[in-house]
Length: 119
Length: 209
Image 1: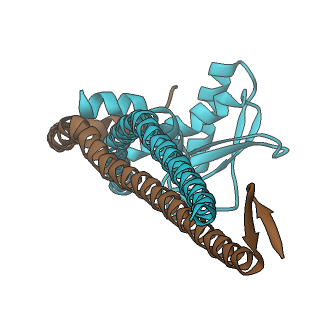
Image 2: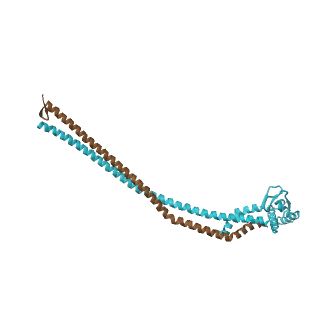
Image 3: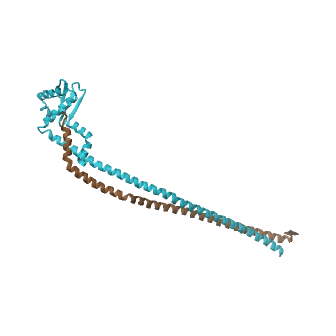
């Protein structure tokens, strides 16, 4: 029996042979598309990992920068904090010195207020 | 041969189509990947820009607050030192009162304190309470004498009566009305408490200026 395929006469064996070839080609084509899909998925996955890595690196940078900013901010006020300590030591020294000189006067003042009645 | 070529042509077309689809899929994936990376880059830039700016402000505020707290603590510590010194002055004064009651001039002080209390109550019939040691000083004769002083100052007939109960005080006196409804506590302890309450500013001026 003769078939006509694409306007050309073919016998059954040729036809079966052609169909086999076409079936094999379909499989090959499918493999090509599957491979492309696999490659595409890898590209996306790699991109997502790279994106996650970028964000993670940024977070690390921010944490590092935060420490730096904290140190920077602390350093800005450090002189004033140190001044406070120095000022405290000096003021306490002065207070104690004055108080020591005036303690008798203060005690006499209190004593007078306690002992002296308003009569 | 023509038949085989036709099939071959179909095969080539199929493979070509598959390759084209495959390329498109890969290109689309590349494009999407680029978009993902671009978005990540943008987000990273935004994080750096906005968060760092915010963190910078937070750190500055934290340091300023820390400084403010340390400044407040500084003043508190200074004030605490001053309070300790003032307390020391009160304590020394209290110790001096213990010595003072042994001196002869204490009797004059005791008289004045009794008179001050009695005048404060407006005179009249009044009880005078003193400690055990001072009971010997507060004789009937002294009470009469002081009654006259109070009477003169208030214009009211006055009788000071020594209370039978003794005070537990270093010195001074408590004077009460006859009905015990009102009294004036002029013991050294009470007077010192009043000075502690009212004279801290004056003491601060004496001790620290």
